[in-house]
Structures are given as C-alpha cells and as structure tokens.
Image (cartoon, rainbow, N blue to C red; front, side, top):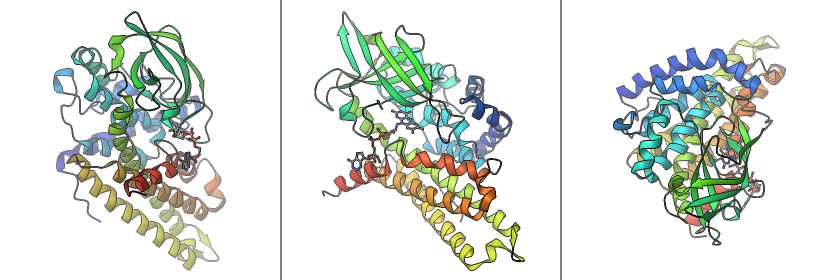
Length: 381
Ligand SMILES: Cc1cc2nc3c(=O)[nH]c(=O)nc-3n(C[C@H](O)[C@H](O)[C@H](O)COP(=O)(O)OP(=O)(O)OC[C@H]3O[C@@H](n4cnc5c(N)ncnc54)[C@H](O)[C@@H]3O)c2cc1C
C-alpha cells in the first residue's frame, strides 16, 4: 500500500538513517547485546549524522525542524532492521526526553543543555517508575526537599532505560503531598554526589538497551536544574506521554512488518510434506490475518502521524494506537515464531529476537490495561 504521509525529504533522511544503521549499528549489535548497552560513541556518531535533536533550534546546533515524521523514520528503520534495542537510546532521547527540555527549559538551561542534546554529548533518560509504583504516578515517593536554594533528592527508581549510559536524567520527584499536584521534574547530572546507578537489569529481551536501577542519596541539585515550576510535573507528563506512546506504536507497526516479511519468506522456502509450509491452508490464513492486521495498523498510525504533526493527537488516540499496535505486534511475532517451527526458538533466527523484543512493548510507556483505562475515562465511563 502506498504511503502518503512522508515527503521526499523524509525519504532522503530514511536513506541516511538506513546507512547509519548498516554501518554504525548492525555490525556492533551483537557485541552490545552481550555487554547490555551500546557504546556511547555510537550515540555521538548519531549526533554527527544528524539523527539527534532534529527539533532543537539551529541556534543550539540542532536540526531546527519540528516535524515528528523524522522521528518516525528513525523508529521505523531501527524496528525494521531488527536492531531496535540498539537504536532505542536514540528514539528514547529524541521522542521522549528531548521534548521536556524543548518545552520547559528556561533560557539558561537551553544554552546549557540543548547543544549537547543535539550533538550527542549528552544522552538522556527519564525516571518515573519506582520499585513500589509504575502505573500509578501518584504513588511516587522519591522526594526533593528544598534546602537553602537547592533541593535534596532522596529515593530510588527502577527499570530506567538508558539508565547506565545517561548523562542527564529527568527525575520525577515529590515536592508536595498532593498525589499529582506535588510532583516536580529535576535534571540530575552524571557525577552528582549521591547519584548512583544500580544494576543493569537482566531482561528477557532488548539486550542491547541498558535498563537500570537508580539511587538518589541526599543528591543536592541546584534550583537551576528544576525543569518548570514546582508541582507542574504531572501536567508536563500528561502533555508529553502521548508522543511517547505514539512513538512506541510507530515502532510496533514497523516491527510487525519486519517480522511478517521474515515469516513470509520462511513460509515460502521451508518445505514439509513436499510443499512449502506457507501453502497449507492454516498457515496461509494465518499469514493473511497477519497481513490484514498490519495494514490496518499502518493506516491508523499513518493517519495519527498526520494528526500529530498538525498538533491534534489526543491523549486517547495515542493510547488507542499504543495498546492496539503493540498487542498486534505481539500476535504477529508469536505467529511468526510458530511458523518457523524449532528454528524460531533459536537465537540465530531474527524472529526469535523480534519475539522477545516485542514483549515489553505492551508494558513500558504505560501498559495495555492503563491505555484502556485512559480511553475508557475519555468515554465518560
Ligand atoms: C524494559 C523496560 C524499560 C522501561 N523504561 C522505563 C523508563 O525509561 N522510565 C520509566 O520511568 N519507566 C520505565 N519502565 C517502567 C514501565 O513504564 C512500567 O513497568 C510500567 O509502567 C508498569 O508499571 P509496573 O511495572 O510498576 O506495573 P504495575 O503498575 O505494578 O502493574 C502491574 C499490572 O497491573 C496492571 N494494572 C495496574 N493498574 C491497573 C489498573 N488501574 N487497571 C487495570 N490493571 C492495572 C498493569 O497493567 C500490569 O499488568 C520500563 C520498563 C521496562 C520493562
């Protein structure tokens, strides 16, 4: 199906992202999976190649173009290449963390941070989840206590993507008692006294992406590292989570397309009972269903991409796209693995990686159940 959402410049950009993926990511992906994180040199190379901070104004060294289609191109190329876990540090930085700096940093903070965010000197992470609370942000207990013009942060976070590699971490902290109105964003910098990284967590998939525990023990943060006003964080998150969720949906549809392509090729070539396995009616129907669902997802996500660049993507639409696309991806990789038979269970077959990497997508960025809660609330029920 022809796609109409991208222009020629986006397709040229796609070529350069594909080149970057082929030269800088894929040759190193296995090493990074082994070590549980990418080398930061790749992130800096991404900055040099123009893959970071496309929306950062040019006066700060960014691309100067606020057009989420460039972000979508990056997500699609990474997901299609099977190296989504290596590239995730880039999409997390661009799609999820950067908007907080662009929207809420004051002039001094913009001068201090935006150049490094655009050229790859500063990798970011966002730390909301805590050991005791994930879906319920109102349950955050990490505190930031005002102290002589500074704040002192105490608490811990877990499951933080880029948690080991990040230079700047956006930390959602409690400055007041109101569950939602008492939350404030702070930028905690690498090397601040009392800021410690815990384990790089051992996951079932996404092995090239570092996911860590973070500890804050009396971390003294100057007020000039507060992003926005006290008590604004919940509103800031509500404004930005739709793009985070939509970004995951974009990646899920592209990942499903890639898994389908692998599966179809295998189904045509693998023989059983004297026939290609794809020619058995059951498998033909499964492939037909996979293709139909992917096409539906593609049309929906492309349409919402248009809405997003027009500034009209709603919280509920992003939630719909997130849960449906990621659940669709889950079905597609499961069917894909099954159709590969025993080979599908072998790590040397890319469908096995697609299977484990897909699993987290219905969980992070807000679970499927929470997405349905959001949509349901929007319906007034
Ligand atoms: C690989 C990975 C990377 C991550 N990266 C980050 C990151 O960079 N930054 C960050 O802050 N967090 C990150 N997370 C955390 C992720 O966002 C949370 O795991 C997720 O939001 C769910 O929170 P939880 O794990 O505490 O589950 P819980 O909130 O404890 O939920 C457990 C189960 O209960 C269900 N549930 C909860 N409330 C309801 C409800 N009201 N109705 C119905 N069902 C409900 C959930 O859907 C889920 O199935 C990451 C997680 C993973 C696994």
